[in-house]
Image 1 (cartoon, rainbow, N blue to C red):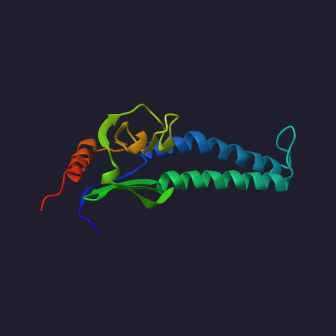
Image 2: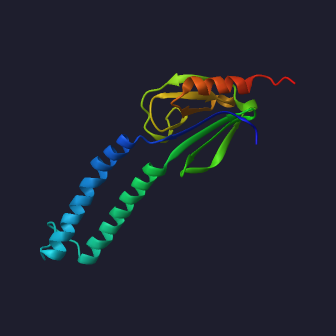
Image 3: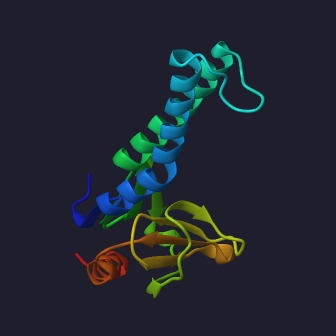
Length: 173
């Protein structure tokens, strides 16, 4: 393996993570738990058109499984980037578990950009640009042949750019 010029790992901000969980998942979990309590322990049907007990259990299990999946995804999602003499490689585990490689010969241009909020994670814009970001609004935009672009978010844009510039220099022996 070639010596790395640059390496960065980013994970979702814990504050952001808990806000998403608190705003999205907690109310749903509380409502379902209250509904099950009312129907199972108080013996009163829950809602105007109540589900059967089995239906309520199945829907609750499905919702709790989705909540757990989202929590685990945000908790363990990690954007990793490496720059070496051959190119750039990245992965966004667990969504992209295998390293994706951008060979330096295929990279036409690269630059630091400040982008508007595109959402976090892996995004494909209407403009055809693939963006991988975990936090912030700084990234490196890569331009390939046929004007294909990829943006990789970074918390260290200057260091990332310096490593890319070093990688792109012709090798001298």
